[in-house]
Amino acid sequence: MICGYARVSTKAQLKGNSLEHQREELRRNGCEIIIEEQYSGSTTARIKFENLIQQQLKSGDTLVVTKLDRFARNVMEGVATIRALFAKGVRVHVLNVGLLENTTMGNFFITTLLAVAELERNLIMERTTAGKQIARTRPGYKEGRPPVPKERIELAMSLLDANTHTYREISEMTGISTATLGRYRRKQRQEQDTQTRRDSNQ
Image 1: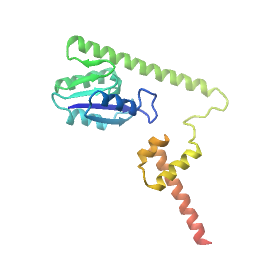
Image 2 (image 1 turned 120 degrees about the vertical axis):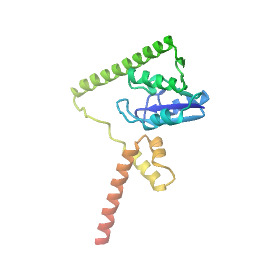
Image 3 (image 1 turned 180 degrees about the vertical axis):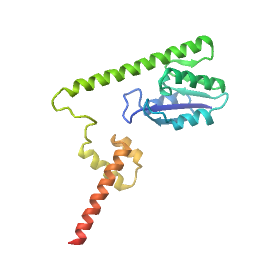
Image 4 (image 1 turned 30 degrees about the horizontal axis):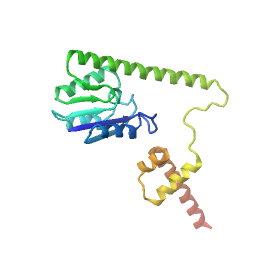
């Protein structure tokens, strides 16, 4: 079995890292099954990935990812995961690197790549933090995400009212997270209930 694993840390990733892009790359490279997951690189829970490693993959199978950092948060974890897969007889194919080999040079190559990936991730975090600190000194700066445009919220609510799409589908269509959709939906129902009570009391 050739199994692909795709992971993003946010709903809206840059081109090349999105779930859609990863899915296309994995399918193009012969993946029969694709497991998709969303979690932050700092989050410990990766239920689907852990289940894939421990339960689904068997000797002779191949795990395919688009990039090495898709399943590793740091060097130690990445090396441990790859060694565990090798011990089970599972091949690891990283599309932008190639098929990883369980040899002395192969393991050295893997460790080096993971170290570079971790360094890049840490540098991005440092630049992001520095950018926020600079932005905070500017007039009109507001912490957090910008508000969702009213028109997009109204579109999402109308799609929910039509009951023809799931929350996940509407989230992908509008770019609004499922959690935010749920919050707006509850607010909408509360407002409707309040208006109904007012009408009944008149």
